[in-house]
View 1 (cartoon, rainbow, N blue to C red):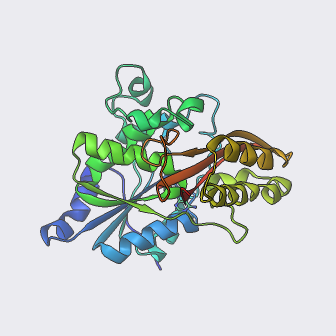
View 2 (spheres, rainbow, N blue to C red):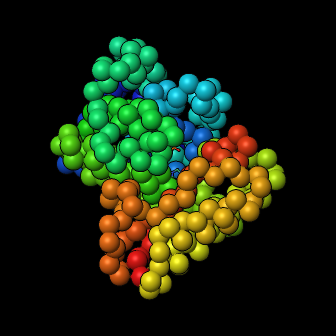
View 3 (cartoon, helix red, strand yellow):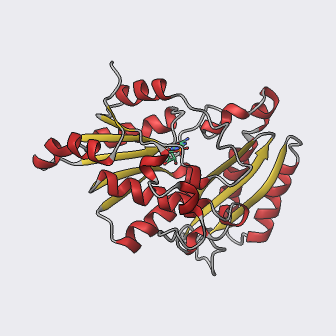
Length: 294
Ligand code: AMP
């Protein structure tokens, strides 16, 4: 299949979508940073199943990388991305330049007080502690992408669960005409969540990394038992990951899925979320699973 047509500016994209909108068609949107894999493909599939047009954006957003993070090394594979997007039902790609997204200059947008979009309280714990500017950068680019695409159904992976909650917050806070759809995490057969950053793993690190999902599944089972204790479950999960010497654990927690804070007096049957962040060499991996309190 030939690659999808590429639009570079919001005006070009709007022109492309004009016919679908005029006919009352539904527009699906899958924002990505490229280096597309089966996880992204599942989002495009989900969008194509319910929408008349599907926009896939490819934009490596400098604002969500802190100095010293992997902005320059981040894999860029645009031709393969366009082919994969087409194969899964995308009808147009949106591939803006940094200047098109941030005409005032991305360094200026990043400066304190100039940023316009507040990622909300859900951005503060977990990823927010280790990467304090990350979600402000995510919120800024997602808001601008939503403005460029217009009213749409937007598909995000649960793989980045805290990001999904930040996006839900910003859509509600700004009253944007966007229906946010969360999609399950796509994994390799051994449980490792697919991620563009898995490309950084050495063979030994790749062999070790499934400990994250295994441990989260064990933790989900543990919180489902009557009389479970959060501190004990978290300590057991941390010990299981620490037993894997190639990993450097940042956090592994049991939280309320809405606030991403420790659950307050959870009742049996309440929804919980277990999340982990762990560095394996150059790759900082995150993962999460749902659970029900016992
Ligand atoms: P990224 O290109 O990594 O910024 O991700 C773009 C979108 O793809 C986000 O909504 C991610 O949550 C989603 N995504 C990334 N990896 C996966 C995966 N393994 N399964 C499902 N969705 C994913």
